[in-house]
Length: 292
Length: 162
Image (cartoon, rainbow over the protein chains, first blue to last red):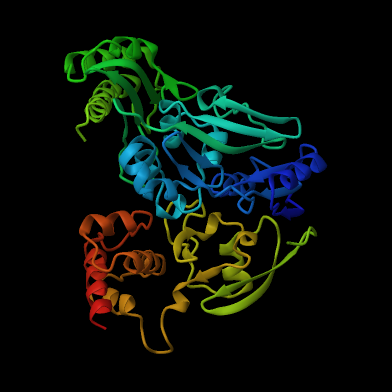
């Protein structure tokens, strides 16, 4: 069944009105780079396509001393090119730069990527590492959830795109003593899913790590935080490479990448996780210590 | 505000000319350009946004037209390969591609040239890495890419001196 209606709400209220009117048969479309393919292959169908790109406020990218706001219509390309993010939140800038190709990045949104709920989604890995929250709006009101709590299974988001809209992501503005980094290993530099990817955020005081988030993909049915790795890092010095290696080993042991003929067997990918995670931790630690 | 009926009448600027066309909600820009507007310089390769042969410039930025709902381009500017030459006068990027031997079967070429144009519009003298990144979404089966990279550098020099 092909959609009968294409709607372009100008406000969140108008968008919610359409979602209510179509009562489960209206689908939100952001950039459309995932959804168009699913519609053509029959994996998704809808009576109405509700294009969110024109909603007021959906294109805002705010960066101040208190918070960073990435609205739901912001594309991967905008984030990857934003000089403030490249300098201060390089994890999200680098993650977005890793996705697809320039053609995809110019259209695809972070919100759409998160709702697609794939475990290796680069922007999601970085958002979870940075402790991002999503503001979700529906007819019932508005709520904020951590991005890491938006998953309920492989490819399944807790967000129902026939009822709910992500309005924006909120991230803490980076403070002195904090560092963040992201990287991935993939067979090609573009148009390629990662074999493994990792996002790390560290907080520190007087040269010692006080808090850590280590997030890996695709090693579970969602972006995977490795608590054993995080615990090993707390208390370690920002130059304690031995601690980084031990944390990375703990991360590799805790992760469960699938055996894949295309993307590598489990043992190989665990080895990659060990190497990549140590590298990304070291980079985040260097940035936390003020060394880029 | 777009109509809520099944077919939408949209207008947009195509290669410098105001264009009106009726599109269905799920119709992609690629389908509309090739089938309805007979703009066949835009190619269908994979249909999944993974080869770049359907690349067009949307408000100056390269996008995959096979994954773009046509309705999204209402009131916007589209440039396809047909919009580059002025009559028989080729655009400097087209000239450079021919001079550098960067065209073999030609199937990737329209998309490749448009990605190059988007790059050169922002960065007139790009480095090798900048060219590789800008063209990373365009796949070529024939050339091995070296001539394409040289063509983009040559095009940059041509544009700067013109």
